Image 1 (cartoon, protein in one colour):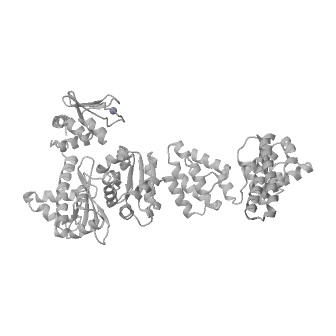
Image 2 (tube, protein in one colour):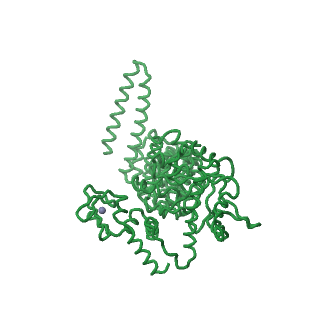
Length: 593
Ligand SMILES: [Zn+2]
């Protein structure tokens, strides 16, 4: 439309629309002098500071300072852009918007939208006809009653090839060809290439009209009733419809999404309907397509938190993962509900009830954790090889999270799900996460996949203390009791160091390496590779104490176990030994403190 036309249209809509009436649809207003007053819908408040001035057709909030006209209100409240707010009000107040300037796409868009309305009427009538009995039975079997069918405008496309076409063209007269062409453009009729003949696209299907935020019917989804392929059939992309930019049932869900703070994302029309009907009103469905950036833009108007409840088997599917990645990359907080295999949300709510479903929503795991558990279920993470593989499957997703705090928050979870106890490996993991790496570094990989190294940090620290500084070595060697070392490989290293030192030989990594077996050499190389500050004598002694305390603790655990099954005669002795060990530990802590 030209700018003059546009200006006229905006003013015509503004003149026709009643701000008080529009606002009163969302906010309880009370007369206050010449104005209306209510609780502001744009900020939390207990005493009303939100005013509507009917004379000036303006609203204003003294609490948060927001204010404007009827367009602004609708844009803010319903998260519409200006053209959407304009269209919505024009429809509501019966103002005809002028055809757009080019007379091209947008007017075709309007024609498609108008034709879709006619089609809705037709499909809904068909549902009530005798021919619609199977569809009614199908819907009833899924607990969808008449009220619900009406709210969602559910209809039925009859069997045969020309039911809709005949009805469409019956009274068209001279406009017959034009209407037929429009119906093809709207995706309601399909045209056979060879013959040029047209036929109904939707046949013997339950029809779910797709409505946008301004209450226009922009397209249709059709589900086959019995067997048959495809199970779901959508409108093709038309002047009015792009399935990558619309979400099913969003208009009915937006209020609840706003209220609950998150959207529930499901795959099927029936899932969205069943959840909304059961009271989980914030449920919306993708239209048989992956989640696109168009969806992201749309949903972001309302929330940045999504609970995804896709088919349980689908969570592992590549397409689903890509959808979730798109959400993650765009800053969404994504959680995943896992229902038992074979249960979609619709079935689950019917069988288990909505309260159980709400519990599932509450328990929904952050996507990364969900993924980690899924990986841990199929990879043997008790083996080091498995840990590396599992980490490398999850890290690419973690790397997509922009927010460093959110990323870091997952480290502990990964360590616990994959059973990573080694603090040095954990350190590597933290670095990988902080640097948004897509795999754990070669050091951690080497450390983990040497598969035999339960060496603790204290043991590594002790080795460093003995290796790095001659003075420290000399001071500590006499204090090292090899029995305190839980790792045979570290024991090998320490013994080699002792031998070399006693012989007066040089103690270097290569020299020690030549004295020990391959297993121990792996450990030594690994310890050398981890960056570390030089060890002081005190730090080295701290390691020794930690190792001694760990051994004593192990001994105490053994005694405790014996105590549970010992004879009364043995008990005294065991208790005495336990007490002695306890004193030793206390003494150690005294030393190290
Ligand atoms: Zn306010």
